Image 1 (cartoon, rainbow, N blue to C red):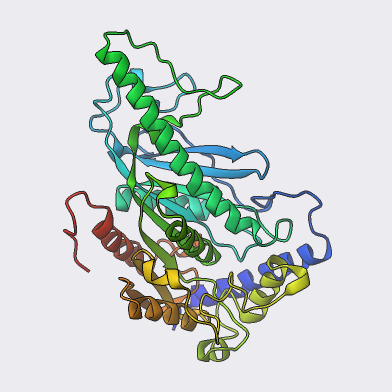
Image 2: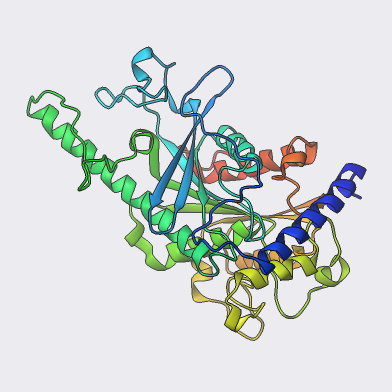
Length: 400
């Protein structure tokens, strides 16, 4: 059984979530493109490395039409040697030295989508910031947390579209970085002096993100989603399969789904047995789905909610899905659909292991108050071991 602390916290969490949902139903924010809530604790970004901060962070807004934001987490392991004073920008943050490129280490990238039942959370919320920092260090990878639009201000398909925009932006950055590198190499071959010239937009601003240009390895991209963010990650993976080489040079090599926010019209065994389970009960989650899905056509067998709709054939692109690690909790009413999806992927010969944690609840590895528990730490370690099978430059040196 979950600990007493989890049980007590669950009662408070449920009360606050239901109150928030009711407030949003009665008086939704009149402004569109909301990506975070004002009543949530925000972690400020720190674009420099220090003794206490071995992961530098930076916030970007990549789409002015949707307020789509990203937070980049860059581990200090991306530097071959320690920082020198010249590596610090005028704003006190880390700036790669493009002249020598000797201190650059290429790292894989993890595109991360936070949870929050579609209506809360954010890429800069404290719990997500802490989790992404740990993930970046544990996997030795760049983590890019996506601040997608929230419901009910932005209903389906806004969050899914933001996921696609994010990975397309990442592909564009990889291409721009390669163009910039080739241009610099050509000037060096021709004996020209380095002038710091960059690819710029119509306003003269640099279009190349310097951290990604210096450290991103686009051939090793992993998608990771938490709760409803797992639904987005899975959608983006399907999109990557469908468009194929149009995302070049980005290659999605794996995805991780942490307790996906799956649901459907026909209740499963776990949905009936654990309907009033900890943190997220079924009635509250249905209310969240009503705020997210289109008002005119509410259906829990929507593709965004149910990846395996009864009576319909399995989508053809599922057999081409990237290796998929699924994490479920014993006391999570959504577990059965996640297990069924993992089994379907394995039936189609996709590498799709399942990690089922005993005495765990939904959000056990990512909720701020639970991240220091042994179970959460073990989950992060298990994820890192499996992910490294697909992002290691030397091949599958890690077994699982």
